[in-house]
Length: 191
Image 1: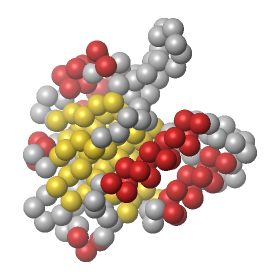
Image 2: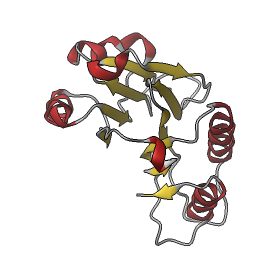
Image 3: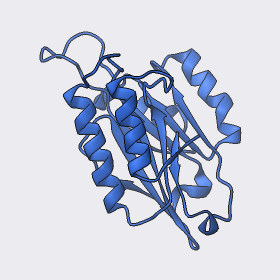
Image 4: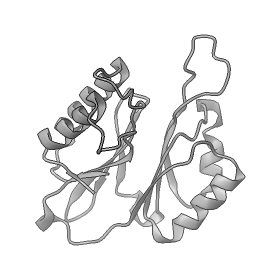
């Protein structure tokens, strides 16, 4: 998780959870439900739900406002298991302050919270897998670019990026080095 905040502007503690569920079976739903009592914002990655099935996620958490990015097929035949999928579950206490940030990237989701005394943005990401080489995929570069563009348009210095970075920061790979550069260049902190 990476954050960029104006610490004097944040006076209220907001609890968050980020979880790569790798599916959305009954066992995953039960685990997520265990997380909810202590969380006001839950960021999910890799739920594998296509657009027509996103209602299943909302149905499991009826008191939470749910923002979704559907999973995608990784091939043109639209067969097999879809990959990815992002959801953000927002506690009822925050729903009236939440608005979706627009993005066309299936690996990026943003929600802006405009409270009476402050605003902040939560970005939920699912990075491509680290190739463990000296190169990165086009999807990786596009995601970094889209993240930079979204950060520059949200009009708040208070940004939290949660999700699956698919990064092990002890590695010296192009993937890890570019994620580290992105964090540094955007004045973020890794938590």
